[in-house]
Image (cartoon, rainbow, N blue to C red; front, side, top):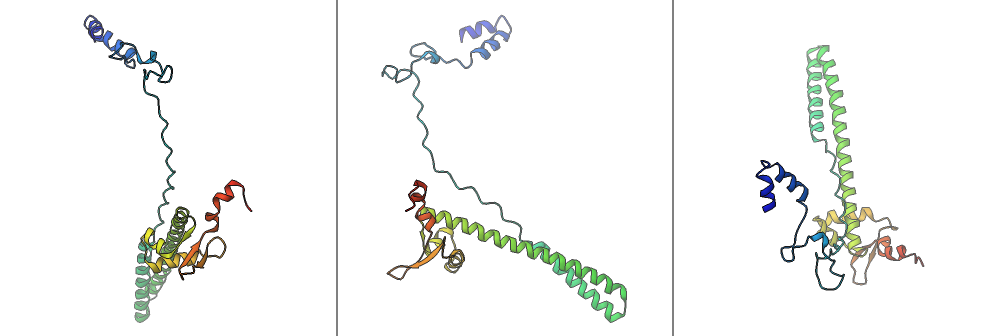
Length: 209
């Protein structure tokens, strides 16, 4: 600090800035007066001098990637398309009752546009439902991995915050008798097995017998 002040006063602060910029990364131990870059490692002589050794951080289990955002449900398109279809129907009815061709033509165009818009929104709704099912299936697979490949409907309902009928519908849809199969225990409990998950350790180790 004395050297920094001594260089700053005669040079109007320029010397102090240069000194600080060149030495700001240099650290001195207040106990021994030596710089940290000259200190010994803790395991050099067993005295514990020098900076503490870096302890490698424990590896944390990788978090599952977040689910992709769900596609829009198309509710606005369905409402707008339905409104156009109703308007087209009204215009056609007025044109027929009054004997005018213009409302009939305009109503036909509105009706076709409304039907196309409604079908567009309906397709978006089906895509959203499919995305929801796929997202739930991925969560069930992650849960099966955590539970060693055996799940019940109650497990799925409790972990995914679903009703029992909804959880049962998901498990029934995933049950293909091959990768996911249902079994009944001696106590009469219905459970689902995931053979690939149950035997993944054996498969990865190369023991396939």
